[in-house]
Amino acid sequence: MSATTREIRLASRPHGEPTDEDFELGESPLPEPGPGEVLVRNSYLSVDPYMRGRMRDVKSYIPPFQVGEVLEGGAVGQVVASNDGRFEEGAWIQHMAGWREHALVGDGALAYPVDPAVAPIGTSLGVLGMPGLTAYAGVTEVAPVEEGETVYVSAAAGAVGSVAGQIARLRGCRVVGSAGSAEKVEWLTGELGFDAAFDYHDVELTQALREHCPKGIDVYFDNVGGDHLSAALGRMRVHGRVALCGAVAEYNEETPQSGPDNFVGVIPRRLSLRGFIVFDHAHLLKPFLSEVGAWVRAGDLRYRETVVEGLENMPSAFNGLLAGDNIGKMLVKVGPDPA
Ligand code: NDP
Image (cartoon, rainbow, N blue to C red):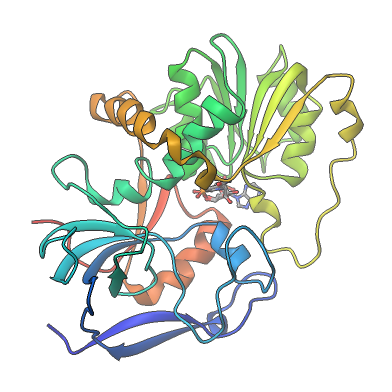
């Protein structure tokens, strides 16, 4: 084993789209696990849109990253040395010490075992991990969908959106998605079984929603905010529900965007708009893994991963995620797959 390991540190707080200079690829001595700790050789690292918010020095539901320190995020890898009775050497675990090739994970950390015999380990960061649970919470609890309803999902070909749309389909809804390329639209209406989809670059959003949701929208799963939220609000049916999951169109903006100019329409249509954070829905983990896991195993719910190779490419993978380079979950591969 090499005596050093590599990690990505935040070099400076980005303004607008992060640049190469905002990140530093560093090397440090390979650590030894202390009492209650394990040393993990990471295999897959997650890049997620919420990380852009943590690069700002603002108070939020999760503390900001610190300049000069290694970034954090979801990761899955194999235990190579263990002083924690919960995880033996050789076990695969999911944890939050990402953005590095090796991680020390303490017994107080959010870590849990992953069984490579059940599903490919990358799924623990995507369809069967946090993004999948976010989708499940959104369509079952935050803005519950009913059979026969029309559900519109934005950023529908991403990690969360692709799962949210498919769960709604499997619950008997008519599902419409928007995404940023013809290839994504084809994936949505082909393999994923969406009833309709469109590339938001090619259309006027209000007109596209009128065309694809002729009876209006009962549930809008909002991953984008901005113009998508505004257009969806204008097409909502009376008593419609909106799951405010994310606002990815705004994460690189330096000044906050103004809200939808048609917000007053929420009142006569008696709409419910609910923001949510997946951590508050941990009680759904068991039903989520049982229901969505069964659909994935049966091939009823499909997923894709866009895998970038090498820790040194993690910053560009992160920027690529915000620019729409991914289909399905964006992952960075930094170590071996299970044998
Ligand atoms: P995705 O896999 O969906 O990747 C982000 C996607 O956003 C890109 O692929 C891109 O796809 C799309 N996008 C980027 N800029 C724009 C834009 N200006 N307009 C429209 N689409 C854009 O990421 P995730 O699935 O991980 O996350 C999706 C959303 O869910 C994010 O907003 C994220 O913050 C949120 N989230 C919220 C959680 C919560 O607890 N509330 C938990 C996890 C995620 P395209 O090519 O289609 O433009």
